[in-house]
Length: 162
Image (tube, rainbow, N blue to C red; front, side):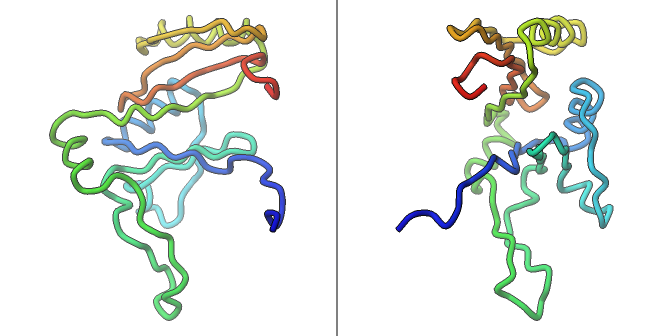
């Protein structure tokens, strides 16, 4: 049996962060993203939502997604399942200073734009820990966010489809 339909794109990308406020500041002030207003506002302590074209970058505060959420008590089958690190991993991340080092890539059109991002990030004091010139002509710069996640800004020419 074939899948019921084609998958069009990745809708959400999630990063788990230790300090939601520091991460918000990084992604708004350094990366230039705009956070979507959350309702109820209390969700701001739990998560942040950054729309980016067809994709949404989600930041979840570590430890805030470890229980199922049932928003309609009279319908227990309606559920957002728990996700994120399990207890042992959580302890290592929060107490031991370990990092998840999740990877994500943000797209720009040209090699010139990716190189400009590399200069900009360095000027802002962001640690750039790698770069790559790809066989198809693409260029990538890698950097660390406040939680040690490995971000990448890449131009067209890194993949056959981009």
